[in-house]
Amino acid sequence: MKNLVRLLMLALLVSACNSTQKEEEKPTIELQMAMDSTVTEKQVNFKAIDSDEALIATALMAAPAESREGCKVIGINMAGEWVTFREGSNEFIVITDDPSKPGFNAACYHQDLEPFMARGRELRAQGKSGGEIFDIREAEVKSGQLEMGNPGSTLHIYYGSKTNYEPETNKVEDAIYRYVVYLPFATSESTGLPEVPISPDHPWIMNPGTHRAHIMISPKPESQDF
Image (tube, rainbow, N blue to C red):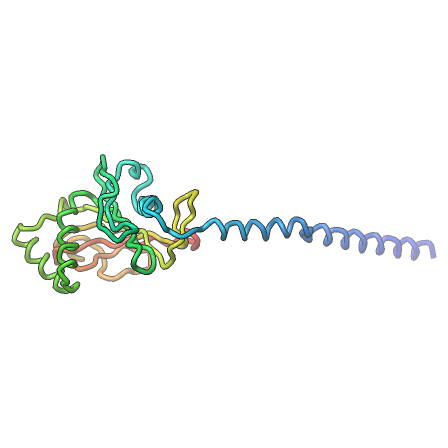
């Protein structure tokens, strides 16, 4: 009889301990409120890109971190004018997002690509289509009239569908990167790269055999597991 009583008492004690442990594992109301507040605060931290200063700050995110301070910054300001926001002291030129267009798209490229980029802007301003711009620049590069810099000149693109940014970091909400390495007239055979990506983040060559041949590199978003 005594053994039975001891077993019952032991079972009740184990049950009580398990119940206490489960209660301790549950977040308290105060902790849950704090967690919810943190999530809400993170969402509130994003604000609209609504000033020239914000245009510059977010566009510089396209450049390598160690080079941002010396980049030249150009683009369309909040008033809709094409301007030079600031002169640079290194080899990079940054183009800000166009605030009149949906989504976000900023770019950073090597200064040796400026004649090529500027020619594209000039032809677009004339109302030329994408195909016409390609053909005109193809002919001009082949003839030596248009320079594209040294093979291997780079273009960094920072883009996304949203136009909010986090002022503390200047990161644009959900924006991602893409990198381009220009190798005029390179081919799959001359580089060993495929003409289509083997996987989403695999480098490949686009427009092979033309003036606009370039290596495409699209890293996976930071939020995506490797």
